[in-house]
Image (tube, rainbow, N blue to C red):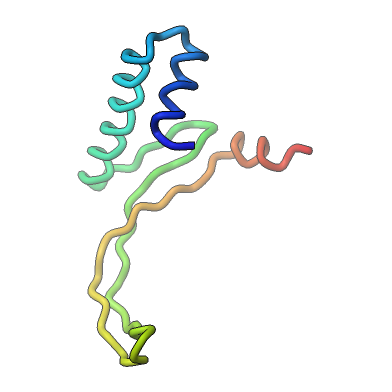
Length: 92
């Protein structure tokens, strides 16, 4: 599902117009984006948690030449599924 399909589903399930559903989806995603850029954790009970983790500098390998390269430390977004989501995925 892409963002446009998500907007259509939100509009259909909520009774919002497509324009209002787009505003709602964009607002939620922007809020999550902003919180993560400020190194805040986002907890959506039952769905999951979004967070930022620090990745240490490490050595990697150029796939083409095989040469070893130094990869710098950086921050990466992570998502951990919540209990309700995990159960829904594993229910036959």
